Image (cartoon, each protein chain N blue to C red):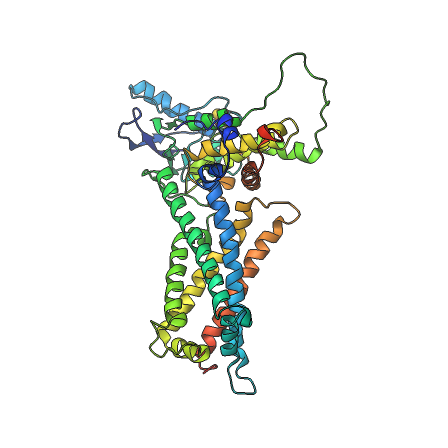
Length: 247
Length: 253
Ligand code: FES
């Protein structure tokens, strides 16, 4: 290990300077985590708002609003593009966001482990800033990932859902969430997600370097509001189906 | 007051160490933490046992030599205070106190409570300075420094390099140190010409030794100078910008 000199930094040229310097540096990886995290936050919010359509019930023709919404998503771009193509673009984009986010978390976790070494403090560390949300970012994140995988298997492709019918969003949702085991897992995942968002939605400003005193207080409000909104919206759906309010 | 001290003893680097318990009798509440250790060492000297090695220099909270982990808190229980400025009145009679060296892969223990903080020197070499021409002293105030940047730079410059931030961090990251050392220069006109090169060189040197920031905020709480993690955000921004600016070749064929 040696000093990275300013001459070395100055001598960098072209795209390699990004891959070698920025995207392999920890600060750069955290920057990527913050950007992808922000994208995923937006996705989670839109997903939650869209799903609230389940509360609208049926339209005049007897079709569930949420089924129509699902079809509209598949039909994005109308007749101009092949069916489902825009939706697939979004899916690929999402996958990339997830992939980069998890890759960065993985690399950074390994680096942090080795930087910390094997020695531990004898006396219990008297943590003052560490809280439940930021301490569980890694394992909470893994839980959220497992949930997402199950959720896709359950309600997107239907592997985990024996009553699955392609396109019948409302019925699939009810079939799945009226099983207590599934509903409990969904609720637990919402708790994990809320904690993950609470720390992430604050931390991302820090990683991106957005710390203007004029907006600094807003970062914490944003995190609380975002986590609470997503949590309340999503759990409302789970509880409504589980309790039989929606059937 | 009487105290029981549990202290890490390690004869030299790369050797096994262990905790040993010592009794400190009749400690004055007016004594500083280091003076209390001095008294224990006097007794050890009298019995022929090797005195407890700890680092210290100024004993007025400005050099950063004296950092140790006291009962799981870097620099002990009083916030915004270096170990040498901590007084024994913060403890109760009969307390037992665990004193340990900083723990991080980058900071091997040299002896007892002393660790090798040389990686900080590597970071400073990478860019913790400004380049100026020598010669006659320039006129005072010839470069206008805005009040806000002077204040902010002074806060960053209060870093004494004690490494409590690394010791406090669950990832052993040195981002608070490096942020303070980049920003106290980057915020001032005199530091501006080398701003982005400094950020890149110092960040990348830091990352060869230390972990990454996960925004826990423990470093800020541990810092004897109460340096804000806002400086870490500023350093992150400078590091990102450093990827876009390359002053050396602007407009060159
Ligand atoms: S001995 Fe100098 S800061 Fe404590």
